[in-house]
Amino acid sequence: MANIIEVAKRAGVGIATVSRVINNSGYVKKETRERVEKVIAEIGYVPNEIARSMTLQRNNIIAFLLPNSIHRFFGELLYHVETVLYEQGYKLMVCSSSERLEKEIVYIDMLKKNRVDAIILLTNNDVEPYLDKRLPMVSFDRRFEGVPFVASDNYNGGVIAARHLLAVGCKHFMFIGDDAQGEQTAVETEVSKRRIGFFEELGKHGITDIINVEYPLGNYIYIPEDVHRTINLHREVDGIFCISDAVAAEVVKNIEKNGRRVPEDVKVIGYDGGESFLNLGKRITSINQPPRALADAIVELVQAQIRKETPGNRIVPVNLNVGETT
Image 1 (cartoon, rainbow, N blue to C red):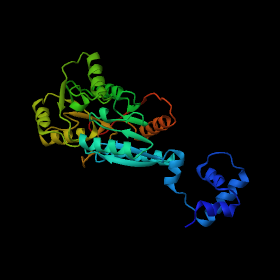
Image 2: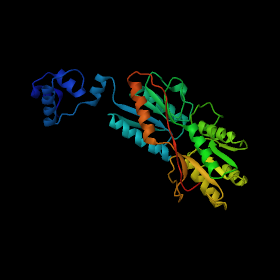
Image 3: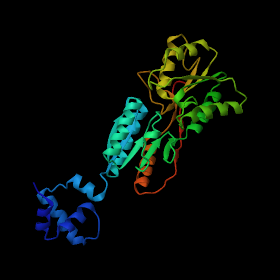
């Protein structure tokens, strides 16, 4: 197998020069660089990544800790983050925790011991006591002391949802979320602003009697039966804003199963991107948070952290995708 010594010998340069060419560090004359690169191509030399990472004090691996990749939006965000990181010369390590705090603690400990260049955090658990903030890290939709975060404009998303439901004639409103996005936990999340924006915008129109359905965190796809019973109990409700498109899809199926029509009798709006879920048969009206723009912002903050800069937070604009549920 070819090695750096053979490259240096054939190119007629020292090992240090070959190293500078490989790592793109330090000055090398153009003709010398071209000669070294030609030899590398001819003999098929592949640099030792471990040795390079020790020299450069980095290994170009970014870890992404997330609850799961089953949730459609999480999967899309993961795809775009990996794409953008690869374009910037990084590899992505995925740590899926299944929402379990103990798994997230194990992953965080592993990442601290087996050095990665940075960590991206997407979690609803209280992991702050376990973080080593000397390591570059960026969070998504979460606020940790001293850690920059990226989020969509959740508050404006709630405002847009309220305005749209009012515009299509709704009179009686319901919000459906989970208590990790509310105020019943120690977790500080940007997602709670979806509810706040929705309530405050309706309040500006004199509407304060809004049914707020909160349920325990535990499943991003299916909502508990007692939530369905609450929906069916309040048959006067004709406008529902859901914390996500996945929840909106479940709500639509439940409403239609129980004899009401969407959107004729009840109008439903979700949050994430307006794609159909679970063979719903209709496209959900949704507040769109663009995953590629969010991924670009996340990677921008990751790189700033690696460069030892102190970046600010990034809030990415959202827009309304009108589908067939309003």
